[in-house]
Amino acid sequence: MRNVKAKLVYYSRLAHKKGLTGSFGGNISVKVKDYIFIKATGSVMEEMSYSQVAVMKIDGSIVSAIRPSSEYRLHLSVYRNREDVRAVVHLHPPYSITLSMFEREVPMLTPEAQLYLSKVPVLPFKPAGSEDLARQVSEAMKNYDAVVLERHGIVTVGRTLREAFYKAELVEEVSRLWYQKFIASRE
Image 1 (cartoon, one colour):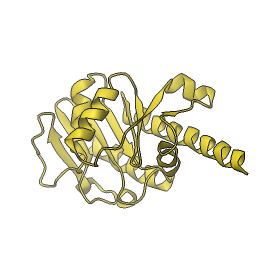
Image 2: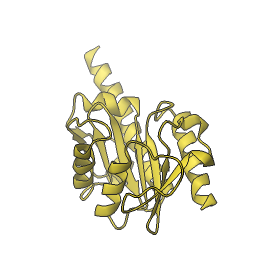
Image 3: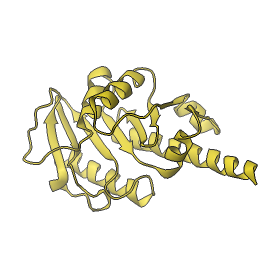
């Protein structure tokens, strides 16, 4: 259990350090058997600690004394629809959010993106933390390992937290390349 919390803390801090999310933005979770370890509500990504990791069961019941992120519905719905997923990463990276206001799909501009992501749709805006958002994301995640949420951020999944995190970083990298191309073409 301590090892799972350590990984959650590490990748939360790394997401902030790499500019993939702001202090309060985003949340990360890991599934171990029927338990979900997830960033606690109100936690600051760059200051994450073991005590800021909430624990839930896959049925939605909260096991820890602290409340999970307001996006817990999104995480639970993805785990319920994808038996192979053991980690969900939801971040608010700036280039991906910018791209979401102009495109309906992330262009696969690099060989790595084509290989590891193949296709990343942009989903229409739904309110953060809502059942509508959770349903929309879990439905899309049946076919994809990454989605961009219009004006909100990205969600990626993996068999490990490392895999899900680096897919998120790859989505942002491709979005940054798109942005640079988009801006360059307007000058």
